[in-house]
Image (tube, rainbow, N blue to C red; front, side):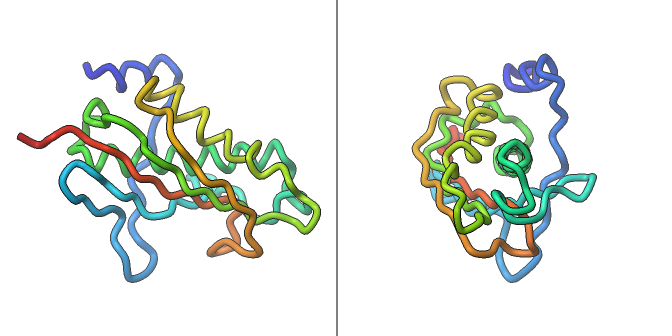
Length: 156
């Protein structure tokens, strides 16, 4: 069993199926050993977390929304790595967007929901650079959207 799969099991995490695009784009692109993963919204099997953080979504629910985005990112990483997350060398960068109310400034705290998950699951390889930005609107009304750039092992 792969190390990351064992870690997921020990954490009680089951990854969702990788989402299919909802518009004219692809889920990820790969050039050499760099994979760019399209933005993943805070949607899950229960419908996900929609709304505006700091207005009708609490900070705690915002953190949970970012964690959902992280689970969706891991599912896309797994798809990009032919089913084996041990092929992730490093999460290079997360670009994170929070649908934030006018007086909400704890955007970095929200995105820790995803950042913490990356380190929990991938260990040292999950440590990354990031941007965390408040937005007026996120597609489909979801609370958080996050995209990623990762380095993967050579396919040889």
